[in-house]
View 1: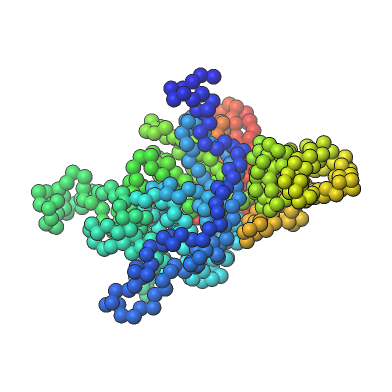
View 2: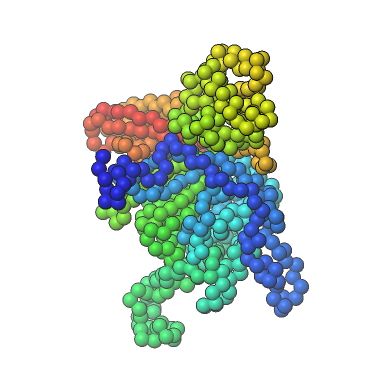
Length: 628
Ligand SMILES: C[S@@+](CC[C@H](N)C(=O)[O-])C[C@H]1O[C@@H](n2cnc3c(N)ncnc32)[C@H](O)[C@@H]1O
């Protein structure tokens, strides 16, 4: 072990941020009432100008409760993040970027306030149905049907709760860009004015809130006969505070302007002729690419994928190198890919397992394809919220496993050194080992009883009950508990975690009870999944060309079906799909379980295949092929 110049050991140095297998417990947040300054000074702010006459305006954003904010409608659910992967790019000393799979509201609630410079989001528009059909991830389906049931108000409430968290996460100088279109932009503008502030029109009047409505204009597609073609999206830009970052962007002068050698506008900038950088970009963007062609190399097949050029303009306007960019509706990974390429740090989330897999793959591939990298690329972690892989839980270090079980049980971790791992209300709780093979013994029971004897509630109040949570209890443990009950009136309640049928309602009831003091019922949020057992068959069909088939794959989650297959025909230590094989579809919407590939050369090749099911399970197969 050597010491680095900062006085840390190399080993310490190499361990920045969470590692694969870690559980990151949620922060200990108090259930507090909303801060009075959470929203702009509403009374003043919502008073419509007198020239408007009497306008019936709601004072607060839809869904807001004066005392409990959005937590009244959407309770706080503090579950840990499970780090299922850390993709390394050779700079372990840098803090990793983070990709979350889970509902962004709950993910965001566990991130630190004022930590992000720029948020760009492209939330599902008020037209949602297509995603359900294309992905069919169960989590996504459920949340979409919830949103659409309430119509437009339901959609706005759903979005408001998330926008509010985004505001909390933005730094004081941070910006948020929300990508919308005619379906919802007018309604969302009103809500965002209420959450962020109306800003102040024109020039330098520095007030927090609304800054611009950007029209992203494009062309192409069909032309209706009875109305104008709808050819722009609207992007609403708001700032958290009254100062912000704005790096003016330029685009080339039009040909006419260049020929005339001066602009039409006579202003202090232009009188002396043309500027080398071009003309400053205004709020109307006709010059930014839209992905339309099916053969566009940028296209990865994710519906509603935005072009990198569009996101790049926003990232450049609002941030500098090293700043943190977030997109909580990451979809196919565009924002993260742009941020990474431009040397910004990033945070991303999506509720669709497929979106997360595609994003992870896109970012890995980007690094592998980048030649002459400008920036050292930090690792990134893939973290799950609310859906946990059972097998990884069993492999977790004991203290993390215990913290996780206690949290899910609604207990507080406390006093592990005394032989008691935590308390549920006043009741002492003990948690067994992570491995299901290590059953609780009589000695464990005795040790827990001894520890309980030393507590005040035992000594002073003669309270003698406790809870033991574990995968299994040996018969001698049960006898020991029975003996304690008979001889000392000590009442130990054994709760078994069942590894065999982890998705059973009985299991959920045990670990996912109403947590004391809060109204949150975790049982609706907590899911355990098993990875599919991926089986790959292949055969040679021509010179260096092989046909692959994953249809023998077994999904282990009851009722699940495969929703995505990804192939890496040149697998080394990191999975990174071969271009065109990250989102393989048969026809338009159906996943293809077969693939054909022509290897560029012969010899021994390592091939990997990743499969995701619609419950969130993901499995990997790797194999070696002698290519002839
Ligand atoms: C319009 S797409 C984003 C496309 C993205 N801008 C791109 O370039 O690929 C919206 C995404 O939001 C995700 N989503 C919807 N509700 C969500 C939620 N509550 N939490 C996280 N992601 C969500 C969907 O799964 C979908 O991938």
